[in-house]
Image (cartoon, rainbow, N blue to C red; front, side, top):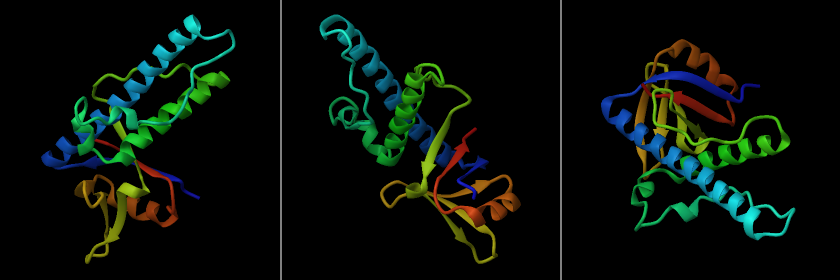
Length: 169
């Protein structure tokens, strides 16, 4: 069974702007989780008894503040949750020795965003081709053009859960 789809998207200029803002919010939360863990680790080494470790969790609500980070309210909370969840999974793999420690992300050309079922849907158009709709009621991005429509048509048959990973150039 197919659990996810990866494809190259061709967004409009307005969609590029919104997607880059969403990617920036996800990067902000990821970096904040990295900084929080570094701080707690240093604090634990200095002030907590030996063998006591800082708590590792998936919470992100402490970063959403009207005074300090009002731009996070313009981003769907699903994206923030996914970013925190990805950080948590990476940290768990690090603790098991399967990969390196989660590092801060920089703004760059290889940015991506992880969208789950809450933020996208497939809709069959009047011409019989599938359309990919991105967003929620409050944060609607609209229809997103894809490069390979034939492959998308084949891939949608097996999707019932999971996520879509799209890149924005």
